[in-house]
Length: 322
Image (cartoon, rainbow, N blue to C red; front, side, top):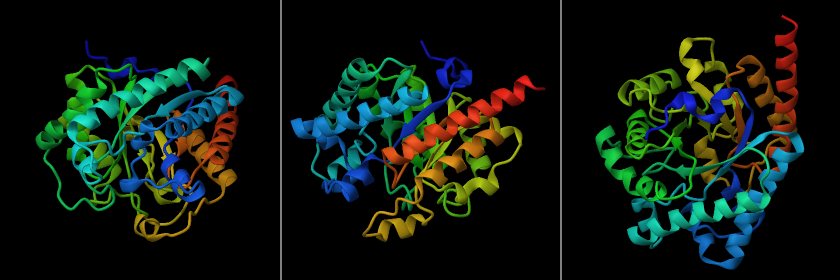
C-alpha cells in the first residue's frame, strides 16, 4: 500500500542530518579511485565494505552526540543502467549491487544505531547532473528509473531519494516510479550560483511542476550540491516553500563548472557552513533535514548537527514565549 507523504517521519518536525559527501572525501582526502564517481563498487571487496561501514558508523555517532535523527544515504547514486555501463557493469550486476547496498546499510543500522535512523536509496540522474545534454520526458524517466527502483523495492529501504536532479521531468519520472512500488520518495534539485536549476527553471517552477504532474506524491523536496550563498536569495515565505524540507549543501562556493575542473578539494569552512544552514532553519522551521554534499566530511557534519541543534532550541524558546 502506498505511503502517503503526510505519513513520512521527517514531516513530524523532528530534526535529521544527511551526508552525500562521501565520494569527494574518498577521492580527494583518502586517495580512493572511483571511476565514474561510483562508490557502489566498494561493496565488492572487504576493504570497500569496511570503508562504507565507517561512514555509516560515523554518521550515526554524529546523530547520537547531538540527539538528532540520521538519514543514511546509499552508495547507489550512479548505479543505473547508463552510468553503470560506462564503467563496465551490466544491468544484472547493478540490480544485485543495489540490493547489496541496502542490505549492507541495514546491517550497519542494526550494529551502530539506537536512534531514529532511516535508510535512503540514493537515485541519481541518468546523465550529467550539471549539464544534461538530453532531457527525458516524464514518461521516459519513469521507464528508465523503474529498473533501479524495482530492485530497491525488494529491500528494507525506507525511502527513495532522487538527488542532484537538474530538470523537473526527470524528477516526475522518479516520483511516479517510486509510487508504483508504494515507496515514499524525496526529490532534491541542484541549483547553479543564481539559485536556478542548471536547465534554467526556478525552484518554485520545478517543485510546482513535479507536484502537479505526480499528484503531489513526493514526501518533500530538498536542495543539494550547492552552497547556501547560491540559493539563500530565492528562499521566500511563499506557499511553495512549505514543500522544501531539506538542504544538503556543498562546502565550496565554487560553481559546478569550477568544481568539475578542480584538482584539489575545496572544503570551505565547516563552522561557517553549519551556522549558515542553522540560520536557514531558523527562518524556515519546516526545513528539518540538513547536511553536507560535495567537499564535506564528518567535520562539517558535526558542525551542521551542532548548529542545527542550537537553532532547534532557539525555535522552541521562541514558540514557548509567544
